[in-house]
Image (cartoon, rainbow, N blue to C red; front, side):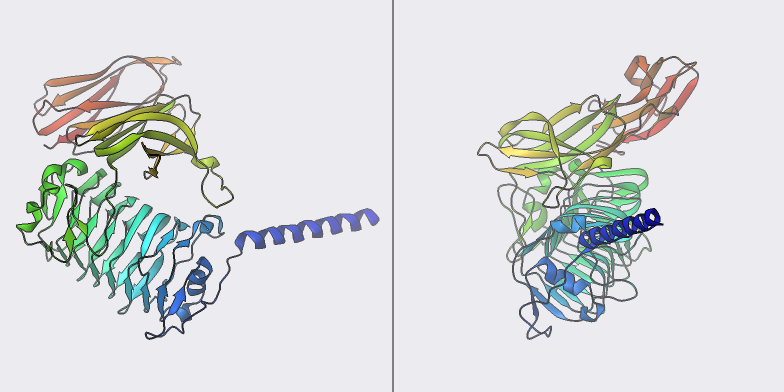
Length: 531
């Protein structure tokens, strides 16, 4: 009996300890703001993460007025249970009040809920709500449908002078707003990397039913399977004016556009909008005008169509236009692409800059995603895995590469730490890639980007044949009438995953085919070169 009693006591102690640990991990403190009463004349003053959570924790506070009074570090949300930050406003409730960030920063908000829709700093915003001057930096959001750094679903509201940076993943996902329905967005921008399945945009995933976007831009790279646009994924019965985008667009299946991927209803209006055909690697769009990088950095490109460079826009040092009221600081390095691909048991990184000022070089940092852990300040643990020397100061495009070798199977995330010669540094957005070990199926993957100009990457998998570790393989490129124009691979290789780069700088625009053969196995992929 005594032995049984001791076992029960031990079990009880274990349960109590587990509950205490659970309480520590899940504790999110809500603190009432020190000033304000939530009225338009005396808004609540938001100064801490605990103040922000106080808003999110109770939907009776979602019709009040708020102003932010200082910068807020939200990195603690990485360790919150339940997937991180709790959105302000969600279905069936919504935020109908007013939030003025007063241009203070909220840094490192985190959300990880791939099965939940309407995710963002604000989830569901509606009924004449107003959001202004909110600066979100280094967000890391993963959700289901309707995901944006600032708002997941914006209905009948007004958003002005806001910006976001970081990474967004979901469907109907945008760098700033997931879905913008019958709402106004003015003088906003995003540099977020945005990825997902469908309706993906650098600024807005889906602009629908009277949604109006003006004097705004998207600078982040976007990728997904269908309806992927540099600024907006899908445009449905709405208006876009005086906007631009520069991000690289990657489409795995169909429906891509340098500025806009898809017009849904035919009642859309696009006025004096542009996209960079070189940095996007896309020569087509469902609206707007494509320009070269040099043209995008020339003021007359915009003033001739009537852009306002008196009170709204400005251009500094031959850069892209920036907003006077919401300026993006001119960066010493303009990174226009950053890709990762698998090469046997390693990962090949490639990146390109458009311009560089005082660039000492790039430290390459890696995080094993499956094994990531939090440091004491709530940030992810990264490790330096290499260094690539920069080009100092240059106005011409430069390409860089680095290969991280002998990695085991798993998912990895990479980022670049760009270092100036005076010691200042900044981080790129991260890219993720998965090494699956020895592949089980012979496969030629769709090239990316596609369309492309002038280079594109082709990944392929080789499998063992008759238990042989090495197999012969050829990868050749043919034009539309069947003429061979390039041989990328012609050798015997071990079973594994590989990638090859096709440079079509000396070829004309048009349709080409990649053909891979190993033994009696053959696969073919169609590619579009668009100059």
